[in-house]
Length: 197
Image 1 (cartoon, rainbow, N blue to C red):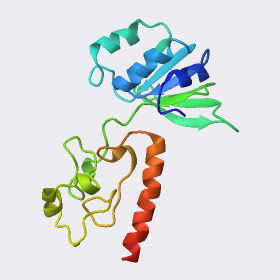
Image 2 (image 1 turned 90 degrees about the vertical axis):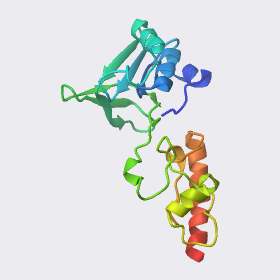
Image 3 (image 1 turned 60 degrees about the vertical axis):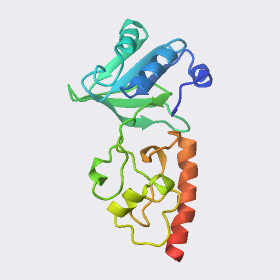
């Protein structure tokens, strides 16, 4: 599993088939870049197409590239292997058919739009619906949330005391797995502090 498509990753999958999950510009750029060295790039897009989430220029490059196959209304339903990834199963939601492919490389380029609207009345969100935490919470955010404590929110704490957000869903995050893991360990320390108080 990869969360970036750099020169290093492209060399690791050179000559192989790869899957790129996502339908935004980052997924499109990754697919075009990886198609230079991969044998085949399968783009899995949950929506009906790329037009709503990707620039027209990039869509043309994808459509014109013979090594890129776009699978719309598709999603991964299984990752299989013993000691490493060996097979990927995805479902064509249009036909209801599940396909299994011997693929060892999956690039996750999804998540540019957070699924947080359901939290709107619980915690403060920024204009793009990412969760605000710590110093990013303005005094107005805390007033609207009726922040009950004398202390300000901890680094990764939301506008709801004792509730923390880490990773891609957090406003201002780096959008990398390693940083999300680090944020998680910081949040655990803060949870211990909240429980101690």
